[in-house]
Length: 114
Image (cartoon, rainbow, N blue to C red):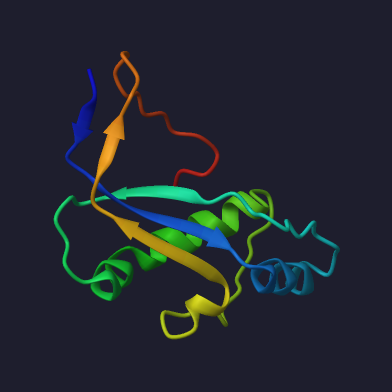
């Protein structure tokens, strides 16, 4: 049976410019992925305006993206803000999340958790 979850999502894919800015700040070379894998952030199911929902979740998303790149390095990347975030990431939004698995969803805290 297909289960429709009561969540929407934001798909966040880093652009090469994000990797370049991080490498410059850390003063070291970072792999830039030609086809970077997105991270999916589950959000409230019903939203009408992508910009509003992005503003609501912006700080948590950016903090997680920076920590994924280098969990042991405290990346600042202060130049990334809500006005220019599209230069660093591609965002896709949706409100249909389907769980095809029979087992329940589990959540864990890992090294990316604040």
